[in-house]
Length: 461
Ligand SMILES: *Cc1c(COP(=O)(O)O)cnc(C)c1O
Ligand code: SF4
Image (cartoon, protein in one colour):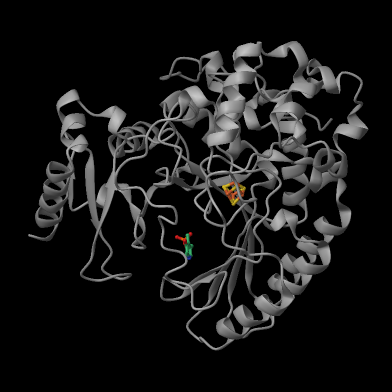
């Protein structure tokens, strides 16, 4: 222990006038992380020691993709009615299901219906709502802006590269449900399998566009790339003189933090690319995706510390979801907890307009209110920008920058002068959040069309 300066001990100097009352206990909640072998309350993990639970291969092998496997794992932790509800949800969901033992262990099984982690990963039939009439499957038009499969070039100087279509888990709310995960009863997917020949085409495109300085490598998920392929992609891009900035996007730290502690080849490949980038004067970062403070435990803390010490800096992107993180206390705790682990909260996204997840979406007004409450609670660089990724390919817009917002009928209209000049992009609040009268208007297609036409007119005059 370093010696503590006695003049800094509490109460050592009574000349100080405290204008602020002492911070209440809840001001420190972000420092209280789940400790110990917290997974052992799950019947299938009762005998699992720390060493096994931290093994990323064990986590992958024991991830859950079917209701039967879930039942086998949790046994009597959840009532039979919950399992039935889940079977119905699995059948009707557009996304395949995959959840890691780490996430299973972080669900509060005394109330799984309300649990924020259950809500994100395990669909319940009883919670499904009809889609909004404005919903589409590839709502961001990633395919329409793709010069070659798996590469989206929408913005002037940056591009999104999707080397593969698999993830360590599958999130119900995934924007890329058009491609990510296996085909389901509801959706046949576009194939984006890891393929060096497809990648070579994407690399040739990036090299042929000198204005491209910033490449986002997403997926799927870069966690699922082998160390060899991670190096191949990283080094190929770093060797291009035009590429100055790269981000590897992965849900991994939120759902499988132990990989950073136990997959040494993958960790080293990432560190080597970041280090090589630094030597070349190029910025390589990790972007991750935490949505709720319960996703962060002592294992996350150790993983983030390992990355930080190795010089890998991490930013976070959160998806705003009803019943998960749409209140200021939860979102505020998430931001403080991330900051405590040196992860910078970068964006909070409005939930994309994807199929089968109306129960998760919330209103633009909720986003506006949350932002107002949270700004000022902590450092500006730990205060995320609230974003609406405009459906139809307008790209990311600050939610405050709408041209027009009809709160009564739940229509926000955005323009994107530097991305798609002259176009209007609409985001719809979920129907359930509207008044009875407004809900009735949406039920009548002619009235709905008139509402939409009016929003476009108001946004452009
Ligand atoms: C999100 C995204 C980017 C990166 O945007 P930033 O605002 O810089 O984070 C790049 N290309 C596409 C297609 C994207 O969706
Ligand atoms: S990890 Fe990302 S890409 Fe994969 S399912 Fe979740 S949101 Fe989609």
